[in-house]
Amino acid sequence: MNSVFLPGNRAFSPEAPLVIAELGTSHNGDPAKAREMIAAASEAGAGCVKFQMVYADEILHPNTGEVALPGGKIRLYDRFRQLEVPPGFYADMKEYVESLGLLFLCTPFGLKSAAQLRELGPEMVKIASPELNFTGLLREIASWNLPVLLSCGVSRLADIERALAVLRSGTGKTEGGSSGAVKNAGPPLCLLHCVTSYPAPETDYNLRVLRSLQAVFGVPVGLSDHSLDPELVPVLALGQGASVIEKHFCLSRGDSGLDDPIALPPELFARMTGALRRAARDGAEKTLAELSRERGAELVEQVLGRGVKTLAPSEEANYERSNRSIHALRDIREGEILKPEDFAVLRTEKILRPGLAPCREPFIAGRRAKNFIAAGEGIRFEDI
Image 1: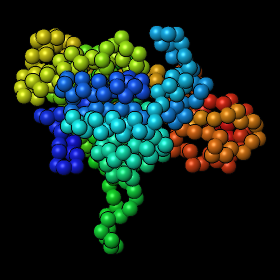
Image 2: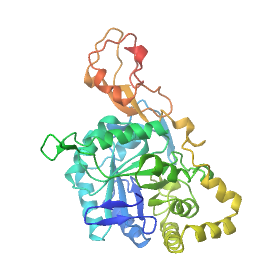
Image 3: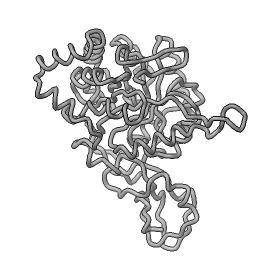
């Protein structure tokens, strides 16, 4: 139950974890820099390199707000537009990643990017925490019947349960061709524990929740880590049953990528992979004793936590804001009939109001607006 299986009888476990270097969009669309990052991640011990396939319209509304960057404030939507690259970029990167013997991984954020990712023939798919409640995207990916890594930051147990139910629905087809046919159970799944905060405090990680998630949902578990320390959280996660460790990767924390300030440069990433190899070799008990001695038993106990799945203090304010909900794409006047092109499932972020859950999307079209809904704002029950 604690192993992640891939085609070709490859498996990852706490004794031999899959280590993912999350490049995200830190390449800024520059193929030369992306290749340099891939090569550096390979040298630093990564077994997998991950990208994010970004189209701004799939993620947020232009009225979402601003983000502070070294050159000044810029609309977050515009920053995501800057990160869009042609599909051929990812095809080239996949070829280079695989030429180094690494696993290529990518996160789609909507149905357009999902369709383009599927054309690349990935072996595995990653769903980011904000899309855990994006029913339409989950349903599409479930139909591929590929292994799925599902990040579950800024979520509660009920949110994870609903997401897994959609993914486990698969294509809805049956196997066996008889009256006793068994419904497709969906793709192989792995939950990645995550704290949706940048950076996330090490003491927010509550790593004993890995065992809890594994017991409750019966799937392998791993870690998507946003903390700054290269060793503490990843190594302790391994002792709690993590088969996958994901960490943001950069060439320098001073680079201009959105995630570079919280990513690990090559020397720190190599330090992490070395620590993970030692922990896998030494076992959980010895590793825990050594970390308690080196870092202090009190700190280690704080990082391990109670094991109860709750929102971490540093991510509570992001709940229902970094997640998806239904938003108006234009100003909608009182009395107008809503059409499918009038709304979309988007992240709310900081200044807009959240709307209805994405699972309500099929029921919005044809409804009449009861009051004015400004472009970008979430569509609520009281609005229709």
